[in-house]
Image (spheres, rainbow, N blue to C red):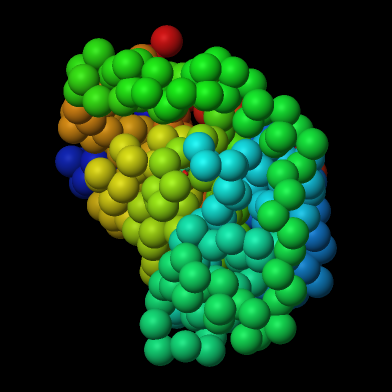
Length: 339
Ligand code: SD4
């Protein structure tokens, strides 16, 4: 029985009143600080984040520093400038950041800038706005001292792009023929298979404050100009310091459709555990997506104010890494809804 069910059961009896106290005490002693991030393959990102947290640093600095490990890794297929390009051969980056005071910053469709998460933080701290996109985001980054990087694709991205072009006979009309069986719309993901390695990182610091960061090169071979969930506060990431934090990976369109990360946090507010909250959000996607579910993947991770964490995904294969005083960057396999 999970905590919420237990609380419900307890509230039905008078015994509950006395039984509630020890349970609360147990919850209060949960782990802090703690950091977790999507996809175990990227667990090295947790290390600098943990180093900041264990020295009493704040969660915002931890997540911003942590995800840059992936942004700086030119071998990473799906985060930073080494990531896969869009169908025009251009790498466009999406990122957002949120702290314990509801401060938010985001960049979308950012080109030729190495660390979109740092730009997102500067949007948050130095502008009156919360989101900058495209050329304007790049101009802002340059004005803040970021260097414009070359447009060359990384070796692996070049190879992947060539394969993509070959598979589709360089003629994008062929992509249009590969339709989602439910929506009858072109299905780019099905052309490319699953391609999910966005890093979403959420942390609770020793002071009890939550923050999160999310950064990606987005869906490989997307239409030029397409923006996913990752830079959208409430979709790819959400933090409410009274309740918890959540972040998403996978098919961004479906995460946006249900305001996924915000929904997970709201489910936690209702008393669901982090894992149950993630599960309910995945079920919501199942209920509302017009697309063929079997060809989608979505994963959420969540962390509550007490340091309890959990995850849930649509399909098998989603994992994540957790670093705390007791969990040394441990791998967790997410439970999932369908085969
Ligand atoms: C997107 N959510 O652009 C991102 C993709 C992703 O791991 O998560 N990749 O839709």
